Length: 134
Image 1 (cartoon, one colour):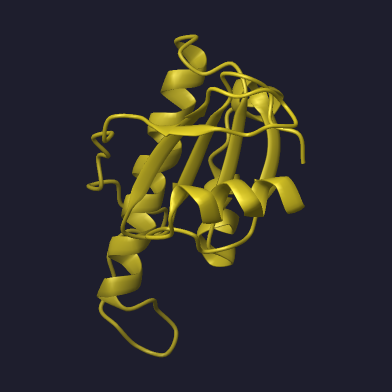
Image 2 (cartoon, helix red, strand yellow):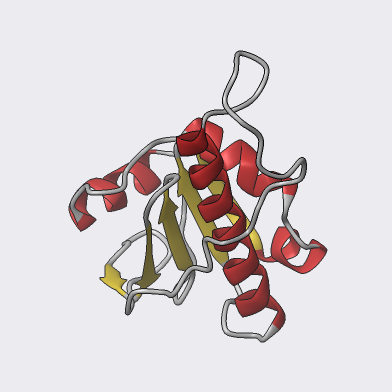
């Protein structure tokens, strides 16, 4: 995948969000880490808190879903504020599915790609390679 210059790359799982900016050209990706973003992880997914059972997600899963809801809120806000013009989201498959539920239309319009991989904790070089190979 070609990554436009100045595009933001969000790498997330249910517990962590890391943002990067492409300072290279579309075909020569050079990611630079952006300052840590404050994610409001207090969002309770629709359905509210339930006690754990086979039919309900565990508290840990609900915490991850709350964090994921905070991530999508943060990304939506930055797109709407004009701070993100082009965006690639890389997230663990389940997290990506949860993120998609909250995309604002403006975020969908700014989205240049998605990768359903868990690359949190990986090196910048690994992330660059994954984008280039997509």
